[in-house]
Length: 380
Image 1 (cartoon, rainbow, N blue to C red):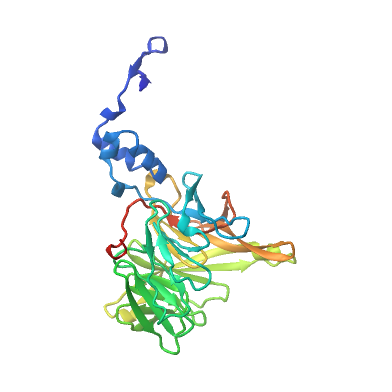
Image 2 (tube, rainbow, N blue to C red):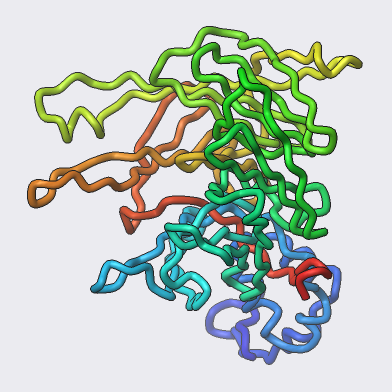
């Protein structure tokens, strides 16, 4: 490869050959740490053998989530192609994923999406769109005639991760993909199975009537309640997210703008967030929520049900201490109401909310891309 020697005046500049494979391993590793688009990292490792050997897949720099869209075909059936949009690189990637055909996809998570048919799917699965690794969920139909996934956890195949399923009864099933094991918890009659999040061996769910947090210990099946720090409004949404090892309770407030135009009233809202950190006592039952004003160098990504938090490296130049969230909206089309999702960003630094421009309107969840092949032994 040729390069111009910059130290000489223009009339004397010479073209010299540079062998990029001569770059030191230390320099190559330093460069690779700044490649926060996973495809740039792949292209970097494909330059030559030395560049490839200088880094490994496990050295992938921290990635920001992609917005996931699952297009439907002419028959209205979910197809085999998925589209991903990166707010960091402002690029759309399309990947062929046969395991997604005819399936609903659920996130968000690091590396994997949950795929299932709309009605009584006997073989739902987790799959990685980049590596095509797939993990089949072994359902126990004798226990659960009608299963519904409530939470897949931030790292679905991690050793400490559980997936939470509910049925129509006061029963919850917690599946651990890394060991193919089920834990069944029968809830007290006063506790209804509610949407929530599996985090660090516990299931956190919000009681919509009181705003209290009901916590289930997955291993032993016991439960306790953390009192609400503040009364919630009926339009508030509560999310539980793990961030740098801490459990956060994120409350989204929405003040709907009144309008005679129903479509405008459903889409135009003012949003704000309160964020609380779990303060655990020696006696776990005495834990409490403490309000905080910042999440530091973190960004939280929320979809319609769950959320994940990622650490952002300063080299990305991306604003931290904020939350990206999907908001369901409706529009009238041929006499019917069609729903779609808008993307917004809320800053904890200045309390401002702004609408985020994106290239497609049907993104419904987030995925943190991952190239590491880590299918649990029981599924290989």
